Amino acid sequence: MARSKNKGSQEVNAGSMADIAFLLLIFFLVTTQIATNKGLTLLLPPKNEDDEPLEIKQNQKNVFKIQINSADRLLVEDEPMEDVGMIRDMVYDFVLNFGNPSSTKKGSDNVSDQDVYNTLPASMKSYISRNLGSDESSDGPGAAIVSLKADRGSSYEIFIQILDELNAAYNRIYGERVGLTDEEFRKLNRNDPKEKELYDRARSGIPKAISIAEPSSQGG
Amino acid sequence: MSKFKKKSQSSQDIPTAALPDIIFMLLFFFMVTTVLRETEVKVEQKIPRAEQLVKLEKKKLVTYLYVGKPKDKSMGTESLIQANDAFIGIDGIINWINQEKSNLNEAERDQITVSMKVDNETKMGIIVDIQTELRDANARKIMYATPQKSEDN
Image 1: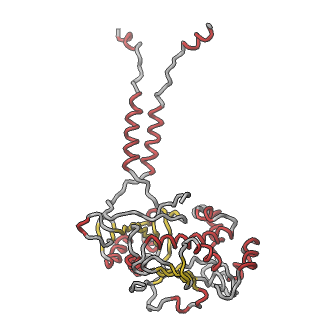
Image 2: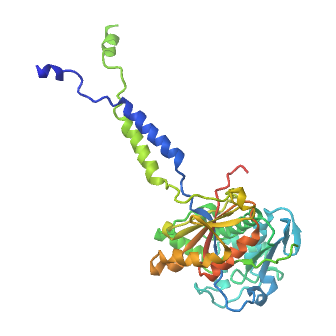
Image 3: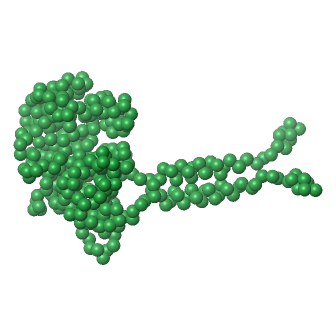
Protein backbone atom coordinates (compact mmCIF):
# COMPACT_ATOMS: atom_id res chain seq x y z
CA MET A 1 0.00 0.00 0.00
CA ALA A 2 2.71 2.39 0.93
CA ARG A 3 4.47 1.65 -2.32
CA SER A 4 1.66 2.93 -4.45
CA LYS A 5 2.25 6.38 -3.02
CA ASN A 6 5.85 6.34 -4.16
CA LYS A 7 4.76 6.18 -7.74
CA GLY A 8 4.04 9.89 -7.64
CA SER A 9 6.79 12.44 -8.17
CA GLN A 10 9.63 11.98 -5.72
CA GLU A 11 11.31 15.29 -6.53
CA VAL A 12 11.02 18.20 -4.20
CA ASN A 13 9.57 21.12 -6.05
CA ALA A 14 12.68 23.21 -6.62
CA GLY A 15 11.12 25.86 -8.81
CA SER A 16 10.86 28.47 -6.10
CA MET A 17 14.45 27.95 -4.99
CA ALA A 18 15.52 30.22 -7.80
CA ASP A 19 13.23 32.96 -6.52
CA ILE A 20 14.63 32.73 -3.02
CA ALA A 21 18.18 32.83 -4.33
CA PHE A 22 17.32 35.78 -6.56
CA LEU A 23 15.95 37.65 -3.59
CA LEU A 24 19.18 37.09 -1.65
CA LEU A 25 21.26 38.01 -4.67
CA ILE A 26 19.42 41.28 -5.18
CA PHE A 27 19.73 42.08 -1.49
CA PHE A 28 23.51 41.69 -1.63
CA LEU A 29 23.76 43.56 -4.89
CA VAL A 30 21.99 46.55 -3.40
CA THR A 31 23.50 46.65 0.06
CA THR A 32 27.15 46.02 -0.69
CA GLN A 33 29.68 48.20 -2.35
CA ILE A 34 32.78 46.89 -4.02
CA ALA A 35 35.69 48.30 -2.04
CA THR A 36 37.67 50.52 -4.36
CA ASN A 37 41.32 50.42 -3.59
CA LYS A 38 42.27 52.55 -6.52
CA GLY A 39 43.62 56.02 -6.63
CA LEU A 40 46.60 58.24 -7.16
CA THR A 41 49.52 57.21 -5.00
CA LEU A 42 52.07 59.59 -3.65
CA LEU A 43 55.16 59.03 -1.56
CA LEU A 44 55.81 61.83 0.88
CA PRO A 45 59.38 62.94 1.46
CA PRO A 46 60.95 61.82 4.74
CA LYS A 47 60.63 64.09 7.70
CA ASN A 48 63.48 66.56 7.60
CA GLU A 49 64.78 68.01 10.81
CA ASP A 50 65.62 71.49 9.66
CA ASP A 51 62.71 73.33 8.18
CA GLU A 52 64.58 74.40 5.10
CA PRO A 53 62.67 73.55 1.94
CA LEU A 54 64.52 71.20 -0.37
CA GLU A 55 63.99 73.18 -3.54
CA ILE A 56 66.33 75.98 -2.60
CA LYS A 57 69.31 73.69 -2.95
CA GLN A 58 68.20 72.63 -6.39
CA ASN A 59 69.21 74.40 -9.52
CA GLN A 60 66.17 76.38 -10.67
CA LYS A 61 66.16 74.86 -14.14
CA ASN A 62 65.75 71.39 -12.65
CA VAL A 63 62.49 72.37 -11.00
CA PHE A 64 59.24 72.42 -12.92
CA LYS A 65 57.04 74.80 -11.01
CA ILE A 66 53.28 74.59 -10.94
CA GLN A 67 51.40 77.01 -8.74
CA ILE A 68 47.68 77.19 -8.06
CA ASN A 69 46.05 80.23 -6.53
CA SER A 70 42.91 80.43 -4.47
CA ALA A 71 40.78 81.02 -7.56
CA ASP A 72 42.10 77.77 -9.10
CA ARG A 73 44.13 79.62 -11.71
CA LEU A 74 47.40 78.05 -12.76
CA LEU A 75 50.87 79.43 -13.07
CA VAL A 76 53.12 76.93 -14.84
CA GLU A 77 56.79 77.84 -15.09
CA ASP A 78 55.81 81.44 -14.29
CA GLU A 79 53.36 81.59 -17.20
CA PRO A 80 49.61 81.66 -16.62
CA MET A 81 47.82 78.69 -18.12
CA GLU A 82 44.19 77.81 -18.74
CA ASP A 83 44.30 74.26 -20.05
CA VAL A 84 45.27 71.62 -17.52
CA GLY A 85 45.82 69.05 -20.26
CA MET A 86 48.91 70.82 -21.56
CA ILE A 87 50.85 70.03 -18.39
CA ARG A 88 51.19 66.40 -19.42
CA ASP A 89 53.28 67.12 -22.51
CA MET A 90 55.26 69.84 -20.80
CA VAL A 91 56.27 67.53 -17.96
CA TYR A 92 57.08 64.76 -20.42
CA ASP A 93 59.45 67.06 -22.28
CA PHE A 94 60.85 68.46 -19.06
CA VAL A 95 61.80 65.12 -17.53
CA LEU A 96 63.30 63.74 -20.72
CA ASN A 97 65.20 66.89 -21.56
CA PHE A 98 68.73 65.55 -20.94
CA GLY A 99 70.16 69.06 -21.17
CA ASN A 100 73.32 68.13 -19.34
CA PRO A 101 73.09 64.46 -18.29
CA SER A 102 75.42 63.65 -15.44
CA SER A 103 77.48 60.48 -15.41
CA THR A 104 77.56 60.17 -11.64
CA LYS A 105 75.66 57.19 -10.40
CA LYS A 106 73.17 57.93 -7.68
CA GLY A 107 69.99 56.80 -6.02
CA SER A 108 69.07 53.36 -4.78
CA ASP A 109 69.26 51.97 -8.33
CA ASN A 110 72.78 53.32 -8.84
CA VAL A 111 72.05 54.50 -12.37
CA SER A 112 73.31 57.69 -13.96
CA ASP A 113 71.42 59.89 -16.41
CA GLN A 114 73.62 58.69 -19.24
CA ASP A 115 72.82 55.07 -18.44
CA VAL A 116 69.16 55.98 -18.56
CA TYR A 117 69.59 57.61 -21.96
CA ASN A 118 71.34 54.52 -23.33
CA THR A 119 68.50 52.24 -22.26
CA LEU A 120 65.80 54.28 -23.99
CA PRO A 121 64.29 52.86 -27.18
CA ALA A 122 65.36 54.39 -30.49
CA SER A 123 62.10 56.25 -31.04
CA MET A 124 62.49 58.14 -27.78
CA LYS A 125 66.15 58.88 -28.45
CA SER A 126 65.38 60.43 -31.81
CA TYR A 127 62.54 62.47 -30.29
CA ILE A 128 64.90 63.77 -27.63
CA SER A 129 67.70 64.64 -30.03
CA ARG A 130 65.30 66.39 -32.42
CA ASN A 131 63.17 68.39 -30.02
CA LEU A 132 64.74 68.46 -26.58
CA GLY A 133 68.13 68.90 -24.98
CA SER A 134 67.77 72.60 -24.30
CA ASP A 135 69.97 74.32 -21.73
CA GLU A 136 66.95 76.03 -20.22
CA SER A 137 65.26 72.85 -19.03
CA SER A 138 66.27 69.98 -16.76
CA ASP A 139 69.72 68.37 -16.77
CA GLY A 140 68.36 64.85 -16.80
CA PRO A 141 65.64 62.68 -15.28
CA GLY A 142 67.70 62.03 -12.16
CA ALA A 143 67.73 65.70 -11.28
CA ALA A 144 64.29 66.74 -12.49
CA ILE A 145 61.75 67.67 -9.85
CA VAL A 146 58.15 68.69 -10.36
CA SER A 147 57.04 71.10 -7.68
CA LEU A 148 53.33 71.54 -7.11
CA LYS A 149 52.41 74.41 -4.88
CA ALA A 150 48.79 75.01 -4.03
CA ASP A 151 47.30 77.88 -2.13
CA ARG A 152 45.41 76.97 1.03
CA GLY A 153 42.23 78.20 -0.60
CA SER A 154 42.50 76.31 -3.88
CA SER A 155 40.18 73.37 -4.41
CA TYR A 156 40.97 69.70 -4.08
CA GLU A 157 39.43 69.06 -7.47
CA ILE A 158 42.02 71.02 -9.43
CA PHE A 159 44.78 69.49 -7.33
CA ILE A 160 43.67 65.99 -8.31
CA GLN A 161 43.42 67.02 -11.96
CA ILE A 162 47.01 68.23 -11.94
CA LEU A 163 48.29 65.26 -9.96
CA ASP A 164 46.56 63.09 -12.53
CA GLU A 165 48.33 64.88 -15.37
CA LEU A 166 51.70 64.51 -13.65
CA ASN A 167 51.15 60.81 -13.12
CA ALA A 168 50.09 60.51 -16.75
CA ALA A 169 53.34 62.09 -17.91
CA TYR A 170 55.49 59.80 -15.78
CA ASN A 171 53.51 56.69 -16.67
CA ARG A 172 53.92 57.54 -20.35
CA ILE A 173 57.67 57.83 -19.90
CA TYR A 174 57.91 54.57 -17.99
CA GLY A 175 55.63 52.80 -20.42
CA GLU A 176 57.40 53.96 -23.56
CA ARG A 177 60.72 52.99 -22.09
CA VAL A 178 59.74 49.32 -21.96
CA GLY A 179 57.48 49.37 -24.99
CA LEU A 180 54.09 49.60 -23.32
CA THR A 181 51.34 52.17 -23.32
CA ASP A 182 50.81 54.12 -20.12
CA GLU A 183 47.70 52.08 -19.39
CA GLU A 184 49.51 48.77 -19.76
CA PHE A 185 52.26 50.04 -17.52
CA ARG A 186 49.82 51.02 -14.79
CA LYS A 187 48.24 47.59 -14.84
CA LEU A 188 51.51 45.72 -14.33
CA ASN A 189 51.11 43.26 -11.49
CA ARG A 190 54.05 43.62 -9.15
CA ASN A 191 53.47 40.23 -7.56
CA ASP A 192 54.41 38.54 -10.82
CA PRO A 193 58.23 38.38 -11.02
CA LYS A 194 58.26 38.87 -14.80
CA GLU A 195 56.11 41.98 -14.66
CA LYS A 196 57.93 43.24 -11.59
CA GLU A 197 61.19 43.07 -13.52
CA LEU A 198 59.64 45.13 -16.32
CA TYR A 199 58.30 47.62 -13.80
CA ASP A 200 61.67 48.03 -12.11
CA ARG A 201 63.47 48.35 -15.43
CA ALA A 202 61.08 51.12 -16.50
CA ARG A 203 61.52 53.05 -13.28
CA SER A 204 65.24 52.69 -12.64
CA GLY A 205 67.01 56.03 -12.83
CA ILE A 206 63.84 58.07 -13.39
CA PRO A 207 62.45 58.86 -9.96
CA LYS A 208 58.89 60.10 -9.79
CA ALA A 209 59.86 63.29 -8.05
CA ILE A 210 56.61 65.11 -7.37
CA SER A 211 56.96 67.55 -4.53
CA ILE A 212 53.94 69.07 -2.86
CA ALA A 213 55.29 72.34 -1.54
CA GLU A 214 54.05 73.98 1.62
CA PRO A 215 51.35 76.42 0.61
CA SER A 216 51.40 80.10 1.17
CA SER A 217 48.87 81.13 3.77
CA GLN A 218 47.93 84.35 2.04
CA GLY A 219 45.37 84.20 -0.72
CA GLY A 220 47.16 84.94 -3.99
CA MET B 1 3.34 13.60 -40.09
CA SER B 2 3.76 10.69 -37.77
CA LYS B 3 7.41 11.58 -37.31
CA PHE B 4 6.63 15.01 -35.95
CA LYS B 5 4.03 13.67 -33.58
CA LYS B 6 6.45 11.26 -32.04
CA LYS B 7 8.84 13.97 -31.12
CA SER B 8 6.28 16.16 -29.47
CA GLN B 9 5.49 13.41 -27.06
CA SER B 10 8.69 13.98 -25.14
CA SER B 11 8.57 16.41 -22.23
CA GLN B 12 8.37 20.04 -23.27
CA ASP B 13 9.50 21.46 -19.93
CA ILE B 14 12.92 22.95 -19.67
CA PRO B 15 14.51 21.38 -16.61
CA THR B 16 14.79 24.18 -14.09
CA ALA B 17 16.33 22.16 -11.31
CA ALA B 18 19.79 23.57 -12.07
CA LEU B 19 18.63 27.17 -12.04
CA PRO B 20 18.94 27.65 -8.26
CA ASP B 21 22.49 26.37 -8.46
CA ILE B 22 23.40 28.97 -11.04
CA ILE B 23 21.80 31.72 -9.01
CA PHE B 24 23.49 30.51 -5.86
CA MET B 25 26.82 30.60 -7.63
CA LEU B 26 26.21 34.23 -8.57
CA LEU B 27 25.12 34.94 -5.01
CA PHE B 28 28.26 33.44 -3.52
CA PHE B 29 30.40 35.34 -6.00
CA PHE B 30 28.92 38.64 -4.88
CA MET B 31 29.07 37.70 -1.22
CA VAL B 32 32.75 36.86 -1.46
CA THR B 33 33.89 39.77 -3.62
CA THR B 34 32.07 42.55 -1.83
CA VAL B 35 32.99 43.97 1.51
CA LEU B 36 30.38 45.40 3.80
CA ARG B 37 31.23 48.93 4.72
CA GLU B 38 32.45 48.77 8.27
CA THR B 39 32.24 52.44 9.07
CA GLU B 40 29.50 54.89 8.42
CA VAL B 41 30.80 57.90 6.57
CA LYS B 42 29.63 61.10 8.16
CA VAL B 43 31.09 63.54 5.71
CA GLU B 44 30.04 64.41 2.20
CA GLN B 45 31.84 62.40 -0.41
CA LYS B 46 31.75 63.60 -3.96
CA ILE B 47 35.12 62.44 -5.10
CA PRO B 48 36.73 63.92 -8.21
CA ARG B 49 37.57 61.46 -10.96
CA ALA B 50 41.02 60.75 -12.31
CA GLU B 51 42.49 58.75 -15.12
CA GLN B 52 45.84 57.39 -14.01
CA LEU B 53 44.78 55.07 -11.24
CA VAL B 54 46.96 52.51 -9.56
CA LYS B 55 45.63 49.56 -7.64
CA LEU B 56 46.95 48.96 -4.17
CA GLU B 57 48.52 45.58 -3.63
CA LYS B 58 48.12 44.87 0.07
CA LYS B 59 44.70 45.63 1.45
CA LYS B 60 45.76 44.86 4.98
CA LEU B 61 48.08 47.83 5.11
CA VAL B 62 45.50 50.35 4.04
CA THR B 63 43.73 52.66 6.45
CA TYR B 64 41.10 55.14 5.44
CA LEU B 65 40.65 58.80 6.12
CA TYR B 66 37.57 60.70 5.01
CA VAL B 67 37.63 64.44 4.52
CA GLY B 68 34.69 66.66 3.66
CA LYS B 69 31.88 68.80 4.92
CA PRO B 70 29.88 67.10 7.66
CA LYS B 71 26.54 65.66 6.55
CA ASP B 72 25.04 66.79 9.82
CA LYS B 73 24.32 70.44 9.13
CA SER B 74 24.43 71.38 12.80
CA MET B 75 28.17 70.78 12.80
CA GLY B 76 28.89 73.67 10.50
CA THR B 77 30.22 73.78 6.96
CA GLU B 78 33.95 73.56 7.61
CA SER B 79 35.61 70.43 6.27
CA LEU B 80 36.24 67.80 8.91
CA ILE B 81 38.43 64.72 9.08
CA GLN B 82 36.87 61.38 9.87
CA ALA B 83 38.96 58.42 10.92
CA ASN B 84 37.17 55.14 11.57
CA ASP B 85 33.95 56.24 13.24
CA ALA B 86 34.85 59.54 14.79
CA PHE B 87 35.88 63.00 13.78
CA ILE B 88 39.44 63.87 14.67
CA GLY B 89 41.31 67.12 14.65
CA ILE B 90 44.52 67.83 12.81
CA ASP B 91 46.59 67.17 15.92
CA GLY B 92 44.88 63.82 16.47
CA ILE B 93 46.29 62.33 13.30
CA ILE B 94 49.66 61.28 14.72
CA ASN B 95 47.94 59.46 17.57
CA TRP B 96 45.54 57.79 15.21
CA ILE B 97 48.34 56.64 12.89
CA ASN B 98 50.27 55.18 15.81
CA GLN B 99 47.14 53.34 16.89
CA GLU B 100 46.63 51.92 13.41
CA LYS B 101 50.27 50.96 13.22
CA SER B 102 50.07 48.99 16.45
CA ASN B 103 47.52 46.72 14.77
CA LEU B 104 50.09 45.66 12.19
CA ASN B 105 53.12 43.43 12.33
CA GLU B 106 56.32 45.06 13.41
CA ALA B 107 57.89 44.61 10.00
CA GLU B 108 54.95 46.12 8.17
CA ARG B 109 54.49 49.24 10.25
CA ASP B 110 56.35 51.56 7.96
CA GLN B 111 54.50 50.18 4.96
CA ILE B 112 51.19 51.57 6.15
CA THR B 113 49.25 53.27 3.38
CA VAL B 114 46.72 55.98 4.10
CA SER B 115 43.92 56.14 1.60
CA MET B 116 42.27 59.55 1.62
CA LYS B 117 38.76 59.99 0.34
CA VAL B 118 38.31 63.67 -0.06
CA ASP B 119 35.28 65.65 -1.16
CA ASN B 120 35.39 67.80 -4.27
CA GLU B 121 34.93 71.11 -2.53
CA THR B 122 37.54 70.68 0.15
CA LYS B 123 40.18 73.36 0.26
CA MET B 124 43.81 72.42 -0.16
CA GLY B 125 44.79 73.91 3.19
CA ILE B 126 43.44 71.02 5.21
CA ILE B 127 44.90 68.46 2.78
CA VAL B 128 48.38 69.91 3.13
CA ASP B 129 48.01 69.99 6.91
CA ILE B 130 47.11 66.31 6.88
CA GLN B 131 50.08 65.57 4.66
CA THR B 132 52.43 67.34 7.04
CA GLU B 133 51.06 65.39 9.99
CA LEU B 134 51.32 62.08 8.14
CA ARG B 135 54.90 62.89 7.31
CA ASP B 136 55.64 63.56 10.94
CA ALA B 137 53.93 60.31 11.90
CA ASN B 138 56.15 58.49 9.39
CA ALA B 139 53.26 57.24 7.32
CA ARG B 140 54.70 58.35 4.02
CA LYS B 141 52.67 56.26 1.63
CA ILE B 142 49.45 58.00 0.83
CA MET B 143 46.83 57.55 -1.81
CA TYR B 144 44.11 59.84 -3.03
CA ALA B 145 41.28 57.42 -3.66
CA THR B 146 39.43 58.35 -6.84
CA PRO B 147 37.05 56.60 -9.17
CA GLN B 148 38.06 56.01 -12.77
CA LYS B 149 37.31 58.78 -15.20
CA SER B 150 35.11 57.41 -17.96
CA GLU B 151 36.43 57.50 -21.50
CA ASP B 152 33.94 59.90 -22.99
CA ASN B 153 34.60 62.94 -20.85
